Length: 408
Ligand code: NAD
Image (cartoon, rainbow, N blue to C red; front, side, top):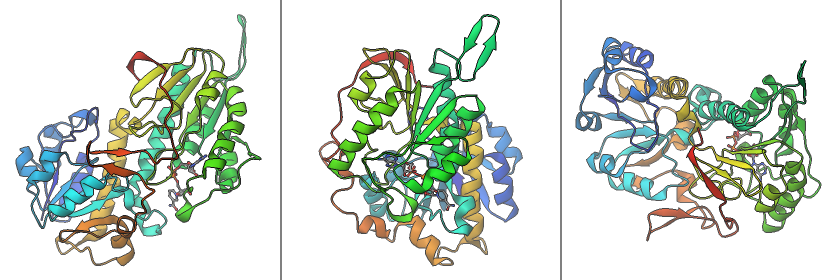
């Protein structure tokens, strides 16, 4: 069976689906590994390093013709057009927010496995949990970004030239990324507070050094499978108002809140930004084309508000640490492959729970239960533009002034 790695085509994406170390492991179980020329460049893996690990370096057309095609993100339109029925595609395909791609993969007749749909709570699937591996990197980098853009120190410093008080950092959303952001900011010496709408995260946040903030206006919004549910309009407004007071008291705010399949919840409103002190920093890991956790954040850009608050649209952070992110993703995807390989072929039937979680299309149809049962309140595709539109209860807010330069 031929397994291939294609070069990522999304703008700014530097990660690669397999690193040479992972190639060697797949070769050891008898798989032929093809790597598109240049696929590893962004993560500092040369074509020669793949050849040395036992891969064949091939053209894009040859890579796209393999039995199993591996990628980090989504295939572009030309790649989808090149796929043929019977092939398998594996990547972070984001089917909950990109129904058009899912439909196109189904129409192409390919079997698509989405790494972001792996059932994370299955113990045997934990080595395959790419959402966690990439969120860990993103949380770490978000804390570093906050420290870099903040014009003062994170730690308490007592020097002959004066004493610097420690920075006050607030982390909103304490899932995998938020916990890593807390730990990293603490290691840099900041005083860290944290909030999540799932109260059970309190002990986790405290265990990595944060003081947990409880809001009196919003009850638990724990949803299914350990994720948060979307808030009602009333809950959302109450949360935003109460959070604004806490936000104003912090120097750096790192937002990581997500609700699966929906626009990231708006936690830092325009009013909250206006109440922050000049020189404060907001690192919005929820920044996306759909809108982010902070009002007016733009993915990949740093915005400076009228009152001097930097709002960093911190999307794509794993790609900014492409070597580490690729190594971890490669371990995740190889763990999935090595688990499923039987007698040189992918035995997709061997594990019903894993199969039901990870396969989104096969045999010309969309098969994932979360996609076939998606309600009309989830993020929906706009056929006119090919983009997704916001859930109506999440109006976006106006953007502030853009500062030239990237967020990273
Ligand atoms: P996520 O990326 O979906 O969301 C990040 C955080 O944002 C979550 O903690 C969520 O509660 C929070 N959030 C959502 N809406 C919010 C709002 N309006 N206000 C404040 N916070 C809000 O989360 P994740 O990091 O992917 O983790 C999701 C769950 O999966 C967690 O329960 C985590 O412990 C669990 N998990 C389990 C395993 C495992 O069992 N092996 C592995 C990874 C994650």
